[in-house]
Image (cartoon, rainbow, N blue to C red):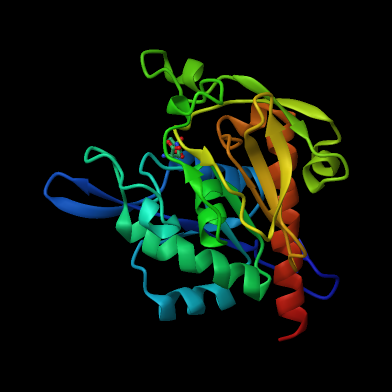
Length: 261
Ligand SMILES: N[C@@H](CCC(=O)NCCCC(=O)O)C(=O)O
């Protein structure tokens, strides 16, 4: 509960975006438990799921109601049509319903000053939504180390720390983490090619790949990371700090809304 000195507020409410997945014969709107758990225990916020309906009127209504937005990771790829990228391979897993929801939602949330945290696919979506582009297959560029997970390993091994990232000097993440370099996990095929003009690099991998950014001059917390801080976040001091900072931003948003009636 948030004590504003006059009366208690319930925990801030954070919208968690969904994927549209076919399970058996039916489509479902789904979100990963580890993201939801990190919102609850890491950010001390109340999660609500945002269905992948792509309804702009509903998204506008949600943005005025929510105290924060979490853009989760996901196995599907952002459709390259959204950044004039090359036609994807026929076997590429896409999610048009999620794209039609998150890409407008990102711009709405930033414009409204709603705190937003992007993770992995969510990081890639933020870059695309704001005008950037992606490498569709980092491993085929010849420019980068291997950023994909080895699916033959155990889950714990797949989400284990994989490489270091250097935090940009004077950046928000350097302040949040109180460190210049951290180790992160790595489970992604795609990555930032052209960074959107309104984004500021916050962390760079040893091979030069941008692995985190913030929105320049954002009214509120607007940060995204390519790695997975939600994975067993309680065991990682930097993950705890990131979700705590996000939660504090959501709490501030809630208090400002409450004070303005
Ligand atoms: N599909 C994109 C983004 C990778 C990603 O978000 N992986 C998440 C895996 C499942 C999870 O932990 O939520 C890419 O491959 O680059």
